[in-house]
Image (cartoon, rainbow, N blue to C red; front, side, top):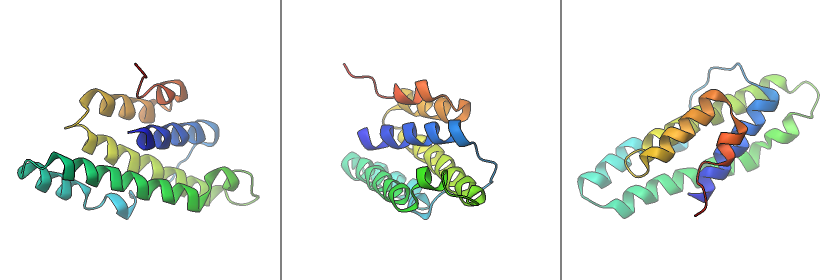
Length: 130
């Protein structure tokens, strides 16, 4: 879940610095995620369910790399685009948190709390090391 923790931490840090007001849909990478996970869990195929979640996280991280929100924040006249990217990331991360719940309910709650409170410290401590 390192990819998810990093994704949420970066998203929260960017939103904390720049904010967003755009109401947007999550990325298409998570549109069918609930169905994939439900289907896999219905077959007791936990590996496939976790794999679907992991694949979605990879796709969302690709979106971050492609859109480079940290560069949008420095570019003149890109506020609307930055707001849309950050709004999309928050909406998508909330879907990922909801779908993580059957596997790691406490982590899913911590992710949701960090995103809704825009708390960078909480986002950095999502998956504590033992």
